[in-house]
Image (cartoon, rainbow, N blue to C red; front, side, top):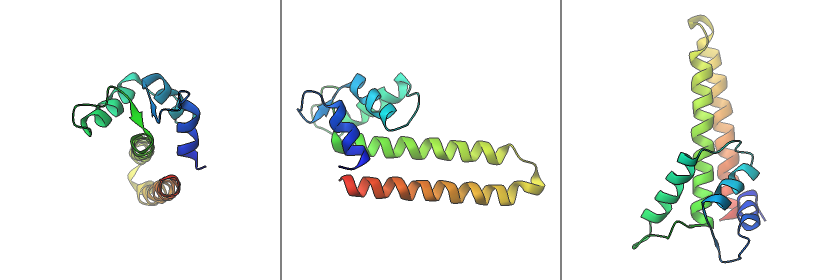
Length: 119
C-alpha cells in the first residue's frame, strides 16, 4: 500500500471509505505535513464537497485525500522555495533559485509518483 493510501486507511477507522475533518488532519500529519491549519482542512473538505452534487456531508474519500495531500505539499514546497529565493541578494539569487526549482521539481515528481502508485 502506498503512503497516501496507507495514511488514509489508517485514518478511516470505520472502514467506510471516507474520513471526517479530524481524521483528515491526523492523516495529513501522519504523512509528515507538519501542523495543518483548520483553514487548510476546511478548504479540503469544501473542495471535496463541491465535487459531488448535493455535497459530500463533510467527508473525504481516498482520491480527494490524495489529491489534497499532493496539492498541499506542492504549495508548501513552492512557498519555501520562494521564501528562500527572496532571502538572498541579487548576486547569488540565480544559482539559489535554480537549486530551489530543482528541489521543488524533484519533490513534485516524488509526490506524483506516490500518487500514481496509490491511485
